Amino acid sequence: MKWEANVRKVTPYVPGEQPKCTQMIKLNTNECPYPPSPGVAEAIAGISTEELRLYPDPEVGELRQALAEYYGVTKEQVFVGVGSDDVLATAFLTFFHSDRPLLFPDITYSFYEVWAELFGIPYERVPLKEDFHICAGDYKRENGGIIFPNPNAPTGMEESRELIEDIVGSNRDVVVIVDEAYVDFGADSVLSLTEKYDNLLVVQTFSKSRAMAGMRIGFAIGHPKLISYLNDVKFSFNSYTMNRTAIAAGVAALKDETYFRNTLERIIETRERTKAELKKLGFLFPDSKSNFIFATHPRLSAKSLYQACRERNIYLRYFDKPGIRDYLRISIGKEEEMHIFLDFLKHYIEQERG
Image 1 (cartoon, rainbow, N blue to C red):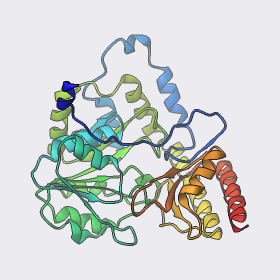
Image 2 (image 1 turned 45 degrees about the vertical axis):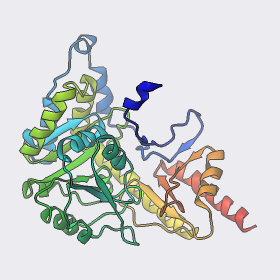
Image 3 (image 1 turned 30 degrees about the vertical axis):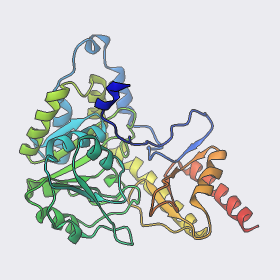
Image 4 (image 1 turned 135 degrees about the horizontal axis):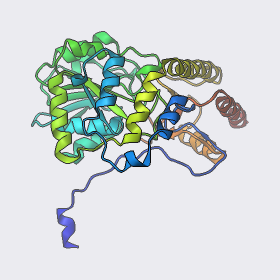
């Protein structure tokens, strides 16, 4: 077909499997195991059909103001989008427009490479150290921008505030994006550094810690000039990115701080108990500050274990990629789900020992 010569061809991002079975333990997509605040359901129920007839606020003023108040910044420092993926994709289009390469870790969120390919952005994947940490010196060279998650995905490892500031401060001529999708699970946010560095953009999401992956709410905080440029690009292709229901739900979620903190505490406690049990079974893993554990076992094939779990309707995430194909990413589920999963692991290991 001749028209195919004009088609933009890319290798797409592959999301975690979304199985349709009813009886399963789903530990493969880092979703929150608990529902969002009850106030979210009330806010959604309060949206009338008359409101749905109308376009939403293109500036998403109510949610931006709520985020500004929550994080102690001005509304002009806040950008929102349909999940952090939408925010990040807009940021790629906006800030990474250079002949010099965009830099990001070689083991990281795989969407970065997809967006770079899609938008024709030159890039380099910078190797992590053997312990999966970033080396700040590797980012002190000519580049067209920098992006990395903190904590990293899929390793769950946190980089220090000092290292991040070193990278940002050494690259004042480009935009540095820190993707904090998992920061609420025990890591230190660098949001306050946006007051010091006008080239730093921090991106977060409601999908993980606020249990709203199905609602798609993401946001960025940075210098007002950065946010202004993001809005220019947003309004150039889609003015109404966030619907009325999502706006109302997002505002409601921010109001219930007690529920939010209690949910985080439950997940972190379960994560730490799961770490202890995995260690007893011989698993090795970095010290996760996220809602998942990136684990390997010296005597077990990660791929075989992944398949064995899947046959029992226990879904984990396996990445068949260099450097990490011996690892499984295990999302933290409810306490009872993790008990079932750990019991299966004990049985599987006993069978393998034969």
